Amino acid sequence: MAFIKKSSMVLLSTMCLALVVSACGSNSGSNKTNSPASTTGNSSSAAPSGKKINLTLMFAWPGDTNAEEEEKMVKEHFKDKYDITFKQVDANVEKTIKTTIAAGEPVDLAFYWPNGMETFVNANMALDLTPYMQGDPKWRDSFIDGTLNLGTYNGKVYAVPNTPVYGLMIANKDLLDKAGVTLPDQPTWDEFTKALATIKAKLSITPFGNAWPSWTNRFLLQTIWPNEQKLQEWNDGKIPFTDPTVVKAFDQTKDLYDKEYMYPGKGALTVTQDQVLAGFKDQKVAIMATVNFIADGAIKNAGIKNPQILSWPTNGTGLKLSPAANGYMIPANVKHPEASVEIMKYLTSPEVLQYRIDHGAPVTVKGVKPADSNSKVELYARDAGNPFHKEIGALDPKLNDYNDTKMPANYIFKGMAALEEMDKLRQDAIKQK
Image (cartoon, rainbow, N blue to C red; front, side, top):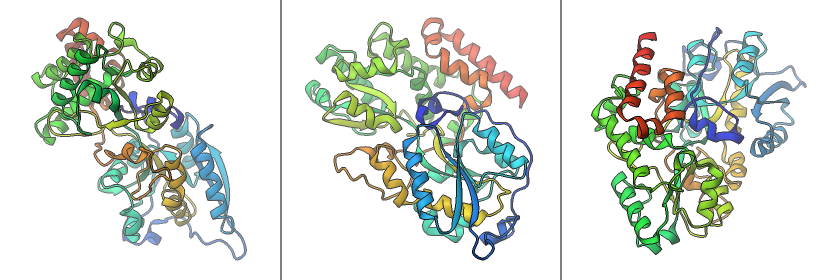
């Protein structure tokens, strides 16, 4: 789960790679007062009499049907007020936004990851949304508690989320019942592993399918610390990979493979998501790891009639999620900031997000319920209010890549030597800071 940015059609990559952002200079609007009008720093949003304001918006990836529908809704809603042009988002979205800012012709609103805004903020390239939030507390309070933290830097909001993205698990409740297993929706690690042992013994299957092996140790290391101060020290790279608590997390991960709880047994370290989904469909897997954004489709594709949505197991401080969400930002030097904010408010309104949630995507706004009363989609945002800004992998791309592509396999086969290799990368990263 983490950091390099990919399209919203391939949100799994958002969960698995490292966010790398480069900065270039610009000037943000003034923050002298709480009045939104004082933050424009460019020009008024008012257009000459009888003339509509021209806006350029960039928030739909190619093939992103939710965003494409939202484009239509925006165009219709503001047809008498704004003359809107849409640009597609591409893999170079960060560079595209920065180029338009540097040229003095910024897009008026853009798709971006709230958790990836640091270089925009440090370079004064993002509009401070805090005064607009303060001026409209109803908008501010419409977000699920905690989700605005993803786009908050130094106490100020610079981006808003529309879709939370994080890992969770789907259980086939019928198989759990058959094995005589009851799991709470937010299980502890002990409850989870005892359930796996019982399912394996009673049903003679490998109970857990996970196509992202590194997730297990990563998530454990987010919850295994005795308090949040220790968690922060870990994420800041102040605790070595040879620390007993870190070793414990990797031992617990290794234990899943040693006891053949992981589907399909041999070869579990290289299993694909398609293979896991096929095993889940064939009832060879009782619990499947997935991403909340695609959970609805996975349940439908597997034909599971009685699913249970499980949060990732906790093992200490409680659940803390890696920083991932899709959302929107506004460049600091837009010509009509009030107009851009008005568009942003509409895009994060229940009216717009209703379409998204009805098509299986979780949302970050309270009170938006799917039209289908049998839908589980609201549960896919259940843990969205528990994010933190950075994992330890953010210290250095090499460190993050090692964890994503070589762990836990290297630990399973090399033991402490693998953790010593990772700790060397941690030390190198700290020296470069």
